[in-house]
Image 1: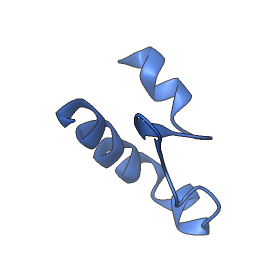
Image 2: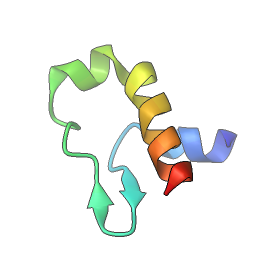
Image 3: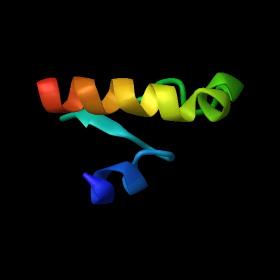
Length: 46
């Protein structure tokens, strides 16, 4: 999982062809860790 988390901050491919649309939003920088968990949960669940 460590390798996956290091790849999250920039262009995140949550699922095949599905990219994180919140990258350019300031909220992403603030809630990065919280969003990261949601992204990982969504990614592993899918």
